[in-house]
Every structure is written in structure tokens, then in C-alpha cells.
Image 1: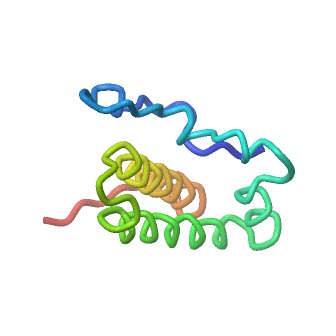
Image 2 (image 1 turned 60 degrees about the vertical axis):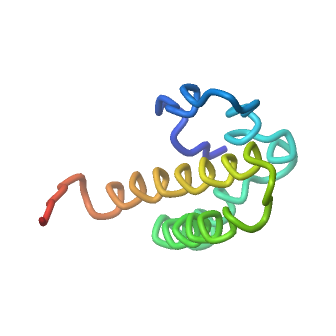
Length: 106
């Protein structure tokens, strides 16, 4: 199973005042039943297709963040964490596909 970014340290553990549980966001129990969507996308569309998939997911989570769980900061935070996980996965896939050269402009 493809588990994105399992080696990254989570700065979310530094968030105080919220009952946020990063493990439930990173690896929810309903994802452990059947095939992983990441594995399916990669096997069907390759790394390039998976890169598109996770990039769209990041946009989805950021877009819905202020609206979906209004009044529930824990759930709102989980959407931001999911967005970052998707972006982290996109970065790793980009490096895999195009190489690890990083060029900064500006």
C-alpha cells in the first residue's frame, strides 16, 4: 500500500488547544479496507496521474476548509493537514518523475 509521507515529522503535534489526532487524519481506519485510492490511481494512471490526483485533492481540502466544518476547529484543522499531506505527496511524486533539482526564483 502506498502511504504518502510516512517519514515526515508532523508539526501538527505542536498545535495546542485542540483535540487533534494526527493518526486519524493520516491513516483513517476506513482506508485500511480494500485497495488504497493512491495505489489504484498509480496502477491505472502511473505516477503522473497520481500527481494530478493528489494535487486536485490538495485544492479540494483547502477550498472547503473554511466552510465544511464551520464552528469545529478540530475538523477544520484536519482538512488543512490533509491538504498538506496531498501537497507533500505531490512534491515527492514530482521529484520521482522529474528529478530532485529544485530551482527557486524570487
